[in-house]
Image (spheres, rainbow, N blue to C red):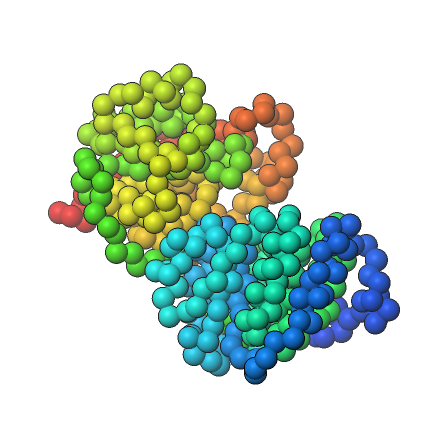
Length: 416
């Protein structure tokens, strides 16, 4: 049990691979083997979109970011170096992102153009996919860049494909046997392919290796940092008087147990803090203990009642943020707020914890190391449906309380 990361910072350049690394025969490209049925269905319409005629000269850079909120935050600092690396003004860079963070994109990407899509509909609905592909084609970008390591070929790589850009710059993705042929197809069309490191190198490091390789010089990685002008807090909250809990996560197994949240909230309430819960309405499950907790004085339940921008407002005014491994945890850290994050072992070190050299003083990453780490969230231990994975459940309340008190104490000293 520890509270810090142990992956190396690993700054420097990535390794640009020779073109022949992914070369395929014209016959294979015409009738590729090993593709999933979904690829074959979608690719026909993708091909039409790619060859749709568009007037005018191709210009600018399209940066494909089919990310969750946390992935977007980890990438954001590297984007500031894209203008230098690709030798064009920031105003000619378009970020193609996801609707899940559209609400906050104008404030986080000032100086860049941002276009967002519904990534889930794009992956599942042919008509929406085709209309979106035509929109991307009409952007008429000269260059397209895709640097995500964990990505889906039928999303990020396919969007780069339909853009019809004259120059394609991609990173080497994480490849499984099921997706090997699909990635090979798209990488064979790339002009530059950059290896940003082996699993489980951290995403921040990867983003900076990619842009460093394009720029031709080593650019030092920096941790996420967000400037956010918060709106007035809703009554009766006052800045610096409450602890914010984000008890949600992408799947139930990655959530710290409800009973642990109840115990931690009560302990912090006894020390004079108002406790505010945000996130999905169904997270955590409304078991009797949690329902009783929310009925107590100084417990505020705003789960499912706040948009993403409002959550950032609440984070900016909080004394402390406590979160599962999810997008809001990265937002809170980037805002500079004291943040405790519960980390599981699914792909430990890729997203959290941050490498020691890039871990801000306001962040504490808590985890219970088990011998089954790096299972990619395919838990190898017996887990009841809806229960927390053992690597998350075994993080003790005492460790969380100690980390919270340490950060709260540091905040008091900073105001002294």
